[in-house]
Length: 272
Image (cartoon, rainbow, N blue to C red):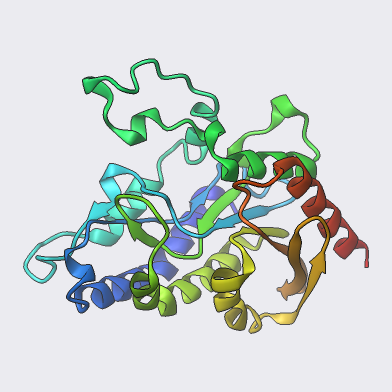
């Protein structure tokens, strides 16, 4: 299935869940006045050529200006929030923005004309994107110069985050969780990845979604201790095996070891 076909399918399947999330947030007197951002999954233009890798984080740490919102006037505004989220995440370049900003040097980052965090974000300074790149090179068996982030798909467990950054707190997670787990299920069904990398941590993050994943055929998971602790497993979609690994967040640990161990665990699992 081509990139645009996948996106069309995702959009159709996910819209009801995003609208349900918006209703939950509006009904929460604290959350509805917060400045938030909405994230829609990004599917690389080359996704599906060979191994199909889906990388999943916790939530965005701030996001594009077009995705910003609060719901104080939700009932009176004539605004299509869902399409704002979709259009903010999806354009003709898709994940090329991560390549374009990988190592970008912005000499004017402190100037008055460049106060927009989005404009000066260097993806190479992100442990998440560095680790994603290291591991994708290994799984896709690509030389350094031949890899593009458009070779993969990217999503997050939670689709709504704070405009200011930081992970969703308990209240925001609770308000969106029910629909976020259904969104993740639909993403997996639509994307049909061969490998899923959860760079989320297990406790308080992945484990909340585990019960939903048990609904897939032949689901199994086990904890593995190496330099770091992981959870590794498989399940089946349309008689095809999906391999996944749940890893600790890469900040403040050795990313090269993390990527090597994840590749090893995925390969061992595939050979068993």
